[in-house]
Length: 337
Image 1 (cartoon, rainbow, N blue to C red):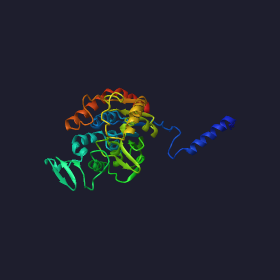
Image 2: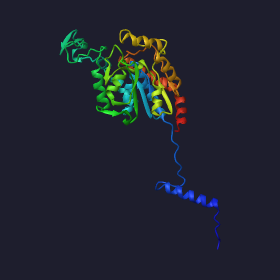
Image 3: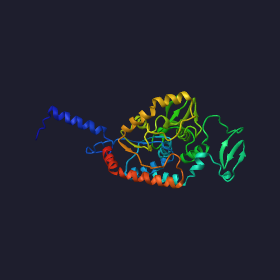
Image 4: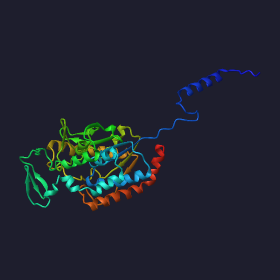
């Protein structure tokens, strides 16, 4: 009869095999090696008003390439596109939304029933062709700067997101952050919890056009003033690689897409103009992207909300996304897919 000789190395190997078997889940085999975790992808959506339609076009191509999105950070219109994407809307649904929405009514709180009347007053509100121009004596009066209250926008966001209560934005199907600016402290505010529709509304409150959103002691306006391409925000969420869609046509430091005249306390404006922290952060964030997409939108601007313009910008975004097809496939390989 053969006699087995147990050496020290044989015993050690046997013990290691027993330990591995003990930790294996039921039904697993020794050949089942743990799958290598893929890298996490962060999506950054920059601000730019109506130009956000181009982001929808680019998203179509990202989806077609099969790139998963694990984290989203957005500013201004990017917070709207990003917030809707985070709750489950995909590019085709956003395309339909952008094409069908009465954007002028949405953005200006227009009363469509009064759109044919040159002048009307109701409940203390004065309307010119349906647009509210004065709220003296109205319960809706708001002494803060900005012409538009944004009531229609919040109502639409509530309907679209189906979120009314305060939540942690990490609980959304895709964790989400949106960026606003506090005009009292002149500081960037990254919104990661609370009422999602109000957070999206705060991030897009262009000074002088929209009323700011008050959250506690903060008075929040468009985050593009301080961080229009929040790559640093999505990195802090845990993104290993970042895709950024930038809507800026003339880069910060060259020209601004809106005027700051008479919209802030003069001290804050002077400090901001001298230091321009948004320019420094913008260029740092651009450099920190793994795939930077900047659709060429020609003469379209932040207020190009006509249906024809929206459709054209979606198409332009999609075409520009296609020019990055090889880069998207390389990124897909890099993240482990």
